[in-house]
Image (cartoon, rainbow, N blue to C red):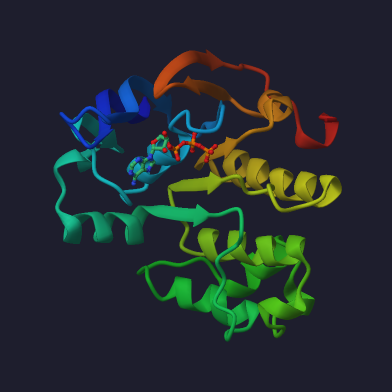
Length: 234
Ligand SMILES: Nc1ncnc2c1ncn2[C@@H]1O[C@H](COP(=O)(O)OP(=O)(O)OP(=O)(O)O)[C@@H](O)[C@H]1O
């Protein structure tokens, strides 16, 4: 069953003017429940715009966006905020942690947003941060900070986890560990994980691959046998 369904989605900046930009230009696709999806494409292809739309952080110019049978395309600001809190976790390239809160406090704050969060101790353990939970972000390495960011996103137990270049600021080995965490979260808990990346080499880890160019879908492929992250080299 489709968990996400987009039909003829347009996101147009400066509509009708001669400098009109079609960041998303007629996107139609469906993602099944429980899929790890990788979205690749050149800079400016419209990947971040699409991720923002899927996460209810941006509105569309035309078309429809259904997520888990909710049509979010006509939601107002308040409805989108409620949708984001309830259903979506975000992981960004530069972590976006609150610097004056410890790792544990960053995660605890996110847990307060939802009615049924996961246990904070279990999540910190799962991302391997239980021994560093009382450290502030500035005292942690890039990889550790990204693990806090993932813990903060998954403690909400979101059905949909959106990741924008989650390994962009990390070295090869640390990046690989982060991707493994994301793949495990998706497959062990049957969650929907979407990763935007410039790295074409990690496509084999995905169940579903979307390639964007000039705001359009150039390829929409299913991968019935995703490769475990530890077996991928790049
Ligand atoms: N707020 C905005 N106003 C005008 N144009 C915008 C705005 N946001 C994005 N764009 C344009 O929309 C297009 C798609 O941008 P987007 O950030 O989605 O691309 P991307 O594939 O994520 O690129 P990158 O890999 O460089 O992050 C680009 O041409 C960008 O300049």
